[in-house]
Length: 127
Image (cartoon, rainbow, N blue to C red; front, side):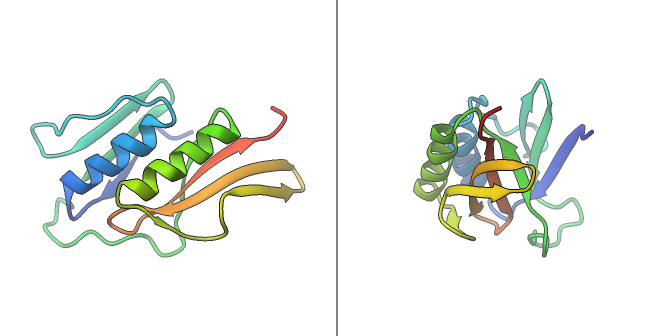
């Protein structure tokens, strides 16, 4: 459904450290800072682009927005959360763990990145 997601950053170096670590915990390769000063993380399923806003204004997180990353296991979610906490992320929502949903149980964790964007790593239990 999505080809890419772009997030704003006020500090590309801090974002690189954070996203290389958290996405690395989900088996996504690190990104170089490209010629436009952007990070581009690419998988078979799409791209995450992290960039300074093109309008020159400060980056701000979306109020009510969350970007969710698929994880392959509960351990991958835990590794993602730990990597984020160790690399400039801030815990938010409930602690990592199981959430019982009508559509099935999920193991998830939430973080805010160095700019304040809300992120989630999610593993669908039993799939």
